[in-house]
Length: 412
Length: 145
Image (cartoon, rainbow over all chains, first blue to last red):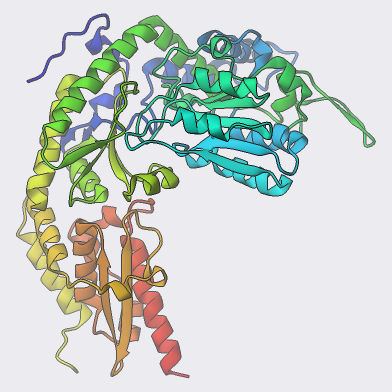
C-alpha cells in the first residue's frame, strides 16, 4: 500500500527541481535515501553556480569594479538569508566556514585555546559524530581539560538527569548534537542550554542534521554557537555556517590568519578586521556560498513546516513498514526524531544489505556513521540507515521495503 | 608441482562460472554461497593484528608458508566480503610467493566485480589483495635470507 497525496506540498513539482532524481542506477530508477549524508541539489542551486561563474565571478569585498561589487552583494545577501533562516539577531554573527566540522574546529581552537585551563570540563554526549568529539579531545589534551560524556538510554535518548549530574562549576563548554546523524533522535537542546547557562557554561549545538528538518531559532534556543553544513540543506559542498553570539565572537581570537581577516598589517603588529571577517581568512568559497542562498530560498518558499510535515509522514510510514519485517530492529526509538531510520537485521551485516540494495538502485548508508562510540554503546558494528528528504515519496519507501525483503531472501 | 592449478587456470575457471549468470541476483547468490562455505577462522586467529584495515566489515586473514607456497585463511563478519575473499583464496592460496606478488587479478574485472575494488572506505577487496601480496612478500623475504 502506498499513498502520495500530500497535505501542503506538491511533490512532483519538488522532484522536478532535482535533476539527479531522474537518474538510473544499475538499470533501475534511483531511490536516493542517503540524505543524512548529503542532500541532492535543486536546479536553482546548480543554476546559481553556473550563473556566478558565467556572469560575475570576481574576488569580493575590496574590488572596485562592477563584477566584484555584484559578487560581494550576492555573497553578503546569503549571510543575511542565513541570519533569517536561523533567526540570529545580527548578520555579523554568521560566519562562513567549510562546513560543520570546520565550524566546531573553529570554536574548539579559538575559544578553547584562549579560554580553557587545566581541570576545566567539556561535556559532549554519546550520540556525537566524530567531528564533535575529536576537536574537543585535541584541545582538551592540549589544555589539560577533561571531556565528560553524557550517556544515552537503550532507545538512543539523551539521559537528561545524567547530564545534570555531570554539570558542575568546572563545566566550561557543552557541545551537543541537535539531531543524531546515526539514529535521528532529537536532543532537548533548549533545556540542555538552559541548564548549562545556569552553571555559567557555554553551549555549542551541532545542527548538521537538524537544520534541514527543524525550525531553527538560535535566539529562542539561546545557543552560544550553532553550526551547520550547506550540503545537508540542499546547498553545495564546501560551505558551512558558524553562528556565534556577537559578544562571545568578539572576545575570541582569530582562528586562521591571512587576507580578509586583517585590518592593518605591519611586520610588528597586525590588527584584525571586525566580525564576521575576523574569522574568514583568505578568499572565501564565494560561488558555493551564493548558491547556498538559493537552497535556503527554495526551502523557505516551500515552507519548513510543510517539509517537516511531509518528512514526519515519511518517517511514520517507513517506521511501520520496516517494523513489519521480521528480525529487523530500529535503532533509536524516541517520540521525537528527524526523518532517519537506522536499523539492524539479525544475522545480516549492514555492508551486505548496502551492497544488495545498491544493486536494486537504492542508495542507503551502512556502517558506523562516524559515531563509533555510539555503535559501541549500542553493541553493534553498524547499522543500515535510510534517511528521507522533502523529495522522497511513499512509493520509494515501498521500494526500499521490497528491496530489504529481497536482501533477506538472498541471504537465507 | 603440488597439483594446484596455476593462477591463470583458476581465474579462467571462475570467469567461466560467472559467464553462466545473466542477472545480478544469481551472481551475488553465488558469492553469498561461497561466503557461507568458507571455512571459519578460529577465535584465536581473530586477533587485532590479523585484521585488515580499510574494510567496512571486519576481515581477519592469516597466512602460512609450507614447502615454498603461501596458504591463506580468512574470515569476515559480512557474507559478501567472505564470498569475495573465498575467491581470492581459491586463486592465490597455495601458489608461490612470486606468483602471488605478480598476479594481476584481472579476473575481478572480467566477472563484473571491479566496483568492489573502488577506493572507497566501504570496499575492502583492494585491501585484501594488498594484504595477501604483502604477506607473500614477507614470507619471501623471510625464506630467502
